[in-house]
Length: 385
Picture 1 (spheres, rainbow, N blue to C red):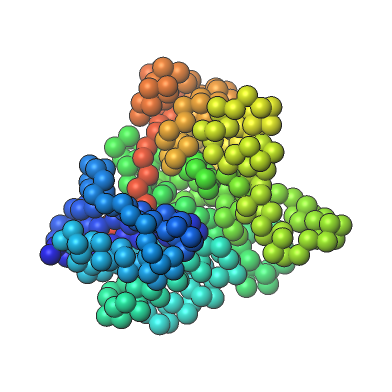
Picture 2 (picture 1 turned 30 degrees about the horizontal axis):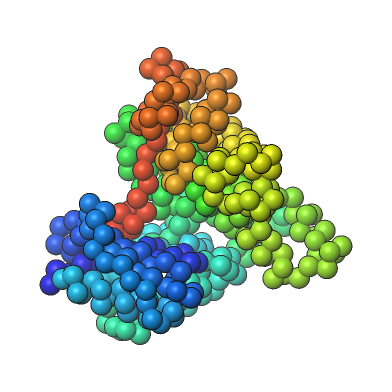
């Protein structure tokens, strides 16, 4: 049996995991639990070349059973779980680096549930499931908020009474593991000290201003609803809209939260056509086209805003599902940024080349693959020694 560190990335409906050798850190396998905690939960396992090794439905749909199935399936393929590192969305103002999980740290993470009500409970349930199965198993956590701890104080504040900020109502920023992963690659492009905006575009989307490898400002704030429009989340929204829903439409907190997290974004603007960018781009319906246009418009506005936070902009990086794979979205965004010195190379963009701008462009845009699980493993091995 090969002893391995398992990097676990739990979402509301999926759980991605990868196994890394404790001796040397090599990637051994990757897997996915789909419909996680729902009906018809399934597990698939692939090797490092993406060849499928196993796929099956699980008889028990509970999250605890899914975690047990993951451990047993890895064991069937010669991998023994020696440690686990979890992606946890919210570390609040306390956790700024990878952390060993114990009773005290888990209680602290529970206190952050109101700050990430849809994401934090799932992570804690998975952590608890591993603890139930093997109380002695070392568990660690990496935080999506941690990368943004370097932001200046002014970038973390809302224009509200000071006591709210002191009580934790502030800008945090998210997708930090993705941004940390991209930051590791900037030196290879000669951008280690540059002013860069990274656009993490997927079902959840955000943008981050990175200068000299550190987060300066982020589109996301107190929650993962803020900033760019997303698959089912609106992004920036005048708070008076929420008050209008509650006061004039009689909506309760649960209904408002569902509207913000499940019924808005690409899905809502397209009139229910889809939250999937691929389906919207293939649609001829006006509402679908408008959703795509708004998605790109908001990205352009956010890039220019983040450039202001750095007093300039040297490069743009596109990453995550849409950023890495949608030439249409990248092309639309770059087409609106020519005035900033980004001269798009349309052939390179269509070919999904690493560099998307012409050789003579004053500034350049690139595509880089993000690797959240790999970043988690790197941070975990650094702590474990």
